[in-house]
Structure formats: C-alpha cells, structure tokens
Image (cartoon, rainbow, N blue to C red; front, side, top):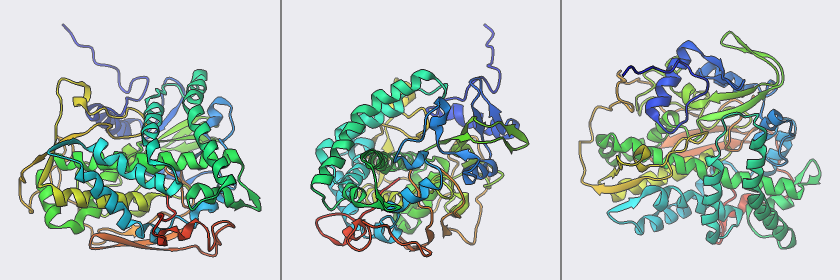
Length: 494
C-alpha cells in the first residue's frame, strides 16, 4: 500500500501534544514559512526576532483578541487590555509583586512543598502530588481562597484548556467559553462582594480597596482580575515542574550533577523555560497592516505568536535543542515570561516555586523516573494540546542514582547534535525593556528589575522609577503582608 504524505505545511497548525510532530513542523516553518496564513485566515509567526517584534509593538498587535468575534476587551483581564487602560489597571497590584516581596515567601513555599512530598511514596503522580497543589495553594492563600476549593479550580482549568480552538472566528467559540466561565465568574463575584462587606488581608481585598485614576474597580473588573491571577498563578508552575522532571528523566546524569551542584538549579529552570515554555503560543489582533519577515499581515487579523518556536530558533540560540546550563538566557532573549509591558507579573514567584520544588525533589530522591504506559495515548501523560505546553499527569517512581556528577549533556530531542555554548555572562538577570509585550501570565510594566544568582537564591531589586503605589496598596496595603505570620505576601505567579 502506498502511503501519501500530507502536503506541508497543511491547512492548520498541529497540536502541542506530540513533540515528534510539532517540533519538526515548527523547525521547518521557521525556515520555509516564517510568517504563514492558515486555512481559517489566522496568521502564525515563528522566528525569534519577529515574535519579539510583535510582542513589543502593542500599538499594532493588540492584546484584545475578543475583536476577532467583534467583542471588547474583558474588563479587568490584564492580558486583553492595551495601553493606556492597561497601565492604570496594572498599577493597582504592581507595587505588591516585586521580587523582593517574593523572596519573603520562601519559608512558606518550602513548608508547603515539604508537606506535600511527605505524603508521597515510592510511586506517585508528580502533578497530583506537587506540581498542581504547590502553586495552587500559594496563589489561593494570597487571594484568600479556601483550600477546599482547589478541586474546582483544577476542574475549571481542565475545562478551559480542553476547548478546541481550530477557527478563532468560530461564532460557537464564544458560547463555549461563556459556558465554562459562567460558574467561574459567579464564584469570583461572590468573593469580591464578600470582601466589600468584610475586607481581609488578602489580594482580593486589596483589589476591592484599590483606586485606579481616582476610582474604585468595578465588581466585574475585580472579579476578572482575581480570576486571571488564579489561573496564571498556578498553570505556569504546574506545567514548568512537569517539564523539569521530564527533562531530568531523560538525563539521569544531570539529576546527579544538580544534586552535587544545587547552585545550577536556576540555570536549569531557565533552560527548561526556554525549551518547554508553559505557554507555547500568544494571541494577538492587528490594528493595522504590518510586515514581518517580508510578509504583510493585514489589519484586523488574528495572529498566533509561537513562543515555543522562537525559543528554539537557531538564529537566536546556538544549538537551541540542547540543555545548556551555561547558556545564560535571560532578559529580552527569554520570551517564556513575555517581553515588555505584559511581562509576566508572577515570573519571580514562578521561578522561586520551581527552584524550591526542584531542591526538595533532589534532596529526597536519588532519582525519579517517569513511568509511561505505551498502551495509552501519549504514554498516559495527558498533555495539553493548545496554548499551554505540559502534561496533566506524570507518574514517577523513586530510582537509585545513575550516572555521575560530571557527564556530557545530551540533547533534549533525539537527532539534534552540537556542542555547548559558553557564555561568560552565564545567568544575566535582566528583565526586558518596557516597550510592549503580552503573555497569559500577567504583567509588570514600569518595573526596572535587576536580578542575580547567589548560590541557590535569586536576589533581585526593583526600582519604581518615580511611580507611586496607588491608593489601597501604599503602607497598609497588600504589599506588607509577607511580614505577617498569619498570611503570605502579596504576590501572584504567572
């Protein structure tokens, strides 16, 4: 029987569930079709330089993707709002989200991680045991949400990412999203109303009390803002931790090396972020015609910016498919947390959660091996297929140590070869310039952040450059909560 190969590049982009399909497809698209229009009329951008350019240009590439179906930006949803409204809303919480505030959360995060790992045995599901409950507990405590609601948060997240978005202009898509978000929205409206009646020492209370240009947030804005913080505050770390363990599973010698040199853990986190960004794609709408890679994208077009592809672009990174702990990818080259005004507000917390989790795993287990089921689709790991890039299930088993602390670092994907890149400025802790980006995580426009690695920790300093925290956060606002033993500091993960 003759097998007929599908015509490249096909009518639509492949899903994210199968690396053996999507990664070669992206590599070929970068070379042959760096800007491409699919059968539904949506545009896709694949190269690092072009993705970064689009992320920076918020005037041309709008975050309000609701325009695809004739809608306005969702009130309070930072990731859908463009300047100048975006700037004013962001300021209601930016003073509470500095890396310095995050650093004060380390003791509590480590306590949660240890409590969770104390419940594990020789075999356990890493997502169920740690990757989901750790970040969802942290963000729930910050928002003042009860632990008894964690199961419903996970169900909402699964429902959201199970939506198949083939045609972004599909008129039925809006109805499906309304069905998903109606119970979620009702929950957060109840939470906002409860804080209005009886404020507490949590982030939702701070949003209710805050003022934007002299006015209070509406109930809708506060509820949607809280929802976005919950979703972004756990999905990123959940996906990242699973990706870290999967990467280490393929390189047991690297596990041994990190146990011997824990100061390399932040570098590992940056490499896994680059290779397996928790959010593989970012959506935009053009407000006017624009040219990228020599191709004109018309006005009012839906655009998918492929962060996953940009991060593996050999034009930006030498031997991009390798794990290189000396690569030093940070600042504008690290697109996994965004780039510019929408840079992920919770990036410092996500990095801290990941570092603590990896430290605790390395300290407890000589090695963890992923247990795959060849009889199940995707070996039973239940990967996300769209937007988020990671797995929802990751069975692991404690194994004896293998390899040595000094080993060659093999490729992440079979078939890629190349030497390690050496960079004298190995881990430069500079966050991107402030001229335009968007990401599903949240944002931190206006922050001039300098960070550096010191052993295991990442210390960072933030200068507000003249910006004053808005009313409701100064002094007695949520920014001081990290110093109180009964609560956690006001910070949100992306």
